[in-house]
Length: 115
Length: 112
Image (tube, rainbow over all chains, first blue to last red; front, side, top):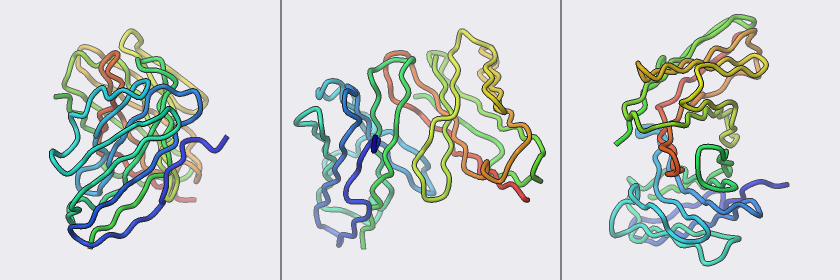
């Protein structure tokens, strides 16, 4: 079991370019979460899906960030017109279901560097 | 919204010693508190959790205490080993919301 898979592991973009990050949750898991990790801000919640439907995107920066889950086997986080402050490690996690009984399993993250 | 604070931010101890990591939260609606460990270059790893209807949970060398009145948690690690060197994160979740709000982390270094 490879766990949650994230690709690419590292991505370097120029300011103003677009970045798409991919996440493959653990098979059978119905909830998928995106978080962002930086030294300054720590671990921040971005958005999550349940059974592919978006439930809460309250942590997503407005306008440039979007997330989708077109099928149960993958989710994407897209950042348009990337800015240096978007540089971070983006983490995807999945859980069997929602609620306080279900552990979230994290992927290795995608390190995004915006030059 | 919920805020989670963790102290200390870093800790250096001799192998074999015990350590205590403190965590506090603000939202009384939070009911689930998982803790994660992040070793250098590795993914976040779940280590222990507690629900708001419990006061204590123990697994092997970890003991997690929860005080609902003061909105405070503490993680006690005994007989520390070099493999315990990592950043430890406390988190909180409101029932059925699923999303985790994390503390800033505690960097634990174990000296052999």
